[in-house]
Amino acid sequence: MTGRQKILKAVYPLLMKITNLFGAKNKALENTGKSTSVISIYDLPLQLNNSQHVPMSNFKGKKLLLVNTASDCGYTGQYSELQTLYNEYNKDLVVIGFPANDFKEQEKGSDEEIASFCQINYGVTFPLAAKSSVVKGNHQNAIFNWLSDKDKNGWNDQQPSWNFSKYLVDENGNLTNYFDPSVSPLSEEVENAIKR
Picture 1 (cartoon, rainbow, N blue to C red):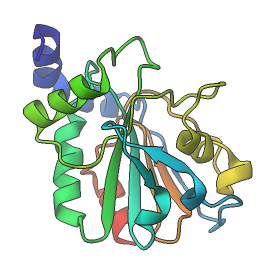
Picture 2: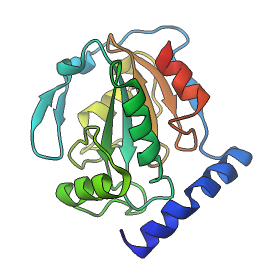
Picture 3: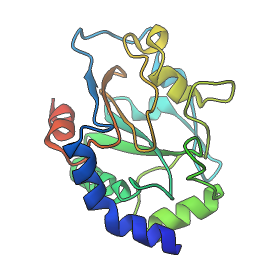
Picture 4: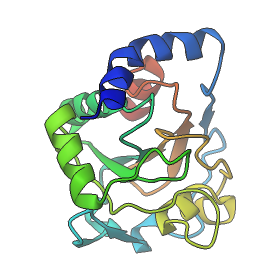
């Protein structure tokens, strides 16, 4: 862990208090119309950071919390919270991190370096995807393209607003919620959505 990363880890709780106090990056969206996906998320490819390809259909019957992540961000402390959530709900929920360098060069490491950083510093055991781009563009990860295109997921066009944006998909493959980075993975809002 670099000096900067140590400082970011230490100030993370303060960052969360400040951003919530000022209402920054704390948007939450819900699929209130119960729209179903137009294209199945289970047909999309998932490449893990160890180069293994896993069919998304392997996750049928479980909820998915899909999160774009970065190792050098003020929100990186959420790795611990995501791991806690994964441990608590792992019978019904799979958390998948999608490392990306889309926001101010905050994920410069290789897949191997990212995996080691997450495991050593945050005890991460949930799956990590191969590093990719999560924002709209020619190289956008297919899963994040689905998550942020209502013509595919049925209702949501919200792309990640920053690192640690969170998308919840139900056990039938329908996108149910979007949570901005300042919404903690351990917030009542996220946990209630998982329990529904």
